[in-house]
Length: 320
Image 1 (tube, rainbow, N blue to C red):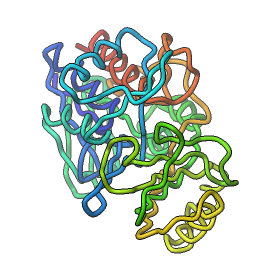
Image 2 (spheres, helix red, strand yellow):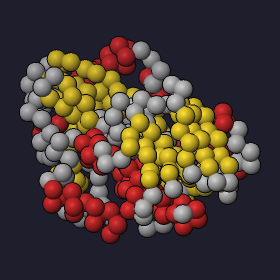
Image 3 (spheres, one colour):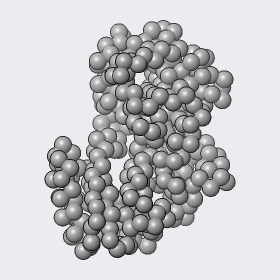
Image 4 (cartoon, rainbow, N blue to C red):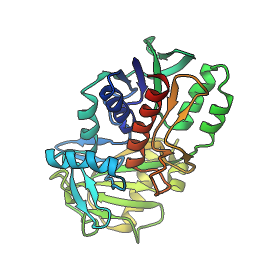
């Protein structure tokens, strides 16, 4: 079967990998200029910094097998922690997803704005005018975006699916990428997430983390702070963020960029690793869909991986 996967983040690429291993022909579609989703890395001058997921932990055997392969190839390394080590990617978290996605037919800068679905086929339409027909599909967008897409598509008989998607709400996050004239230490490992000024959730020093030689901080603002500035101009958000940062430590700032995640972390998750649109060959996956083996109860990198794999397996079982 030809299977369209909308969204080339972790859930999407692991779904593609699972489908390809079963002999199917998956292809990926993403609105971005590269694969990765919230596994995001930004180049700034001669340096770089992660500004989505900073690390991941492992709690299941399924994911541990993949991580062991990454460790052997030098794609990830242990950052810190003993019971559940924090793993990071020395070339940037985005690199992991881009390398996996490169094995598949990948359509970038294609924003899906409409879907059609019948008993044995689906069709995805992009704002560019591109049309992507397939035998089945998996959508891995954040559920609020997927719910909007379903409303626009008006696929008959999917009212309950849309209701379920609408229940999965998300917190936003604004991240400041702060280039400094001099390095600033953030805790003992390069991450500080306590005793910070109001509005700041955590600070990561990319140079201390081992990602770059340039002194760059990734400053994550709290959900409440981010909601307040989410739709404000970059200049206003940057000024407010810099003022909060100054309460932590006096720094010589060379550059400050603002990155926005409207759908950063699920407030409400789905009890199940995937969701099917009634009896149609259309499935939904992502980090808000929690696998039965995921005891954390919250959005994590691993939850996206497990969801992508499980959605692909469910599709194969029912339609392939």
